[in-house]
Amino acid sequence: MKLDIVTEAPGWYTILCVLAGIFYALLLYFREKRLNQVGKRLRIFMASLRFIVVFCLAFLLLSPLLKTTFRTVEKPVIVIAQDASGSLLMGKDSAFNKNEFPDKLKTLIDKLSDKYTVQTYAFGDRFREGTDFAYGDKLTDFSDLFDELDT
Image (cartoon, rainbow, N blue to C red):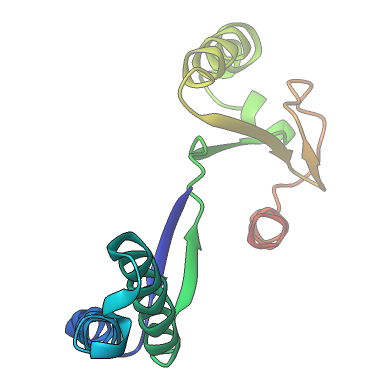
């Protein structure tokens, strides 16, 4: 968490507020001859209080705002969308898709899960979460996939 005090006025206006507080306190408590009988510690205390009040009032005229910044670090999201249609079993690599691909995909997901948030989806006739290696869908609907991922 980071906390900043922000004003619309330039930063050097704050220096003017400090100078106004110092000038006002010195003028009232150290130039005044009637306060000579008051002890030096009491005059310094009263001058300090006057400085704080004048500085705060002048600084509040600058309309300060407290700006709080919270920083949260989240893992990046990786989306793995798998086609679950039966057409994947009709090609030359159908044995790979049925036997080796599920293990390789699970290994990839496990490796990526250390540094990333991995979300898996299957699509075909319909969109669903998780993986589906049954390959039972009759068609591949990419538009349904992109519509769901867009929301």
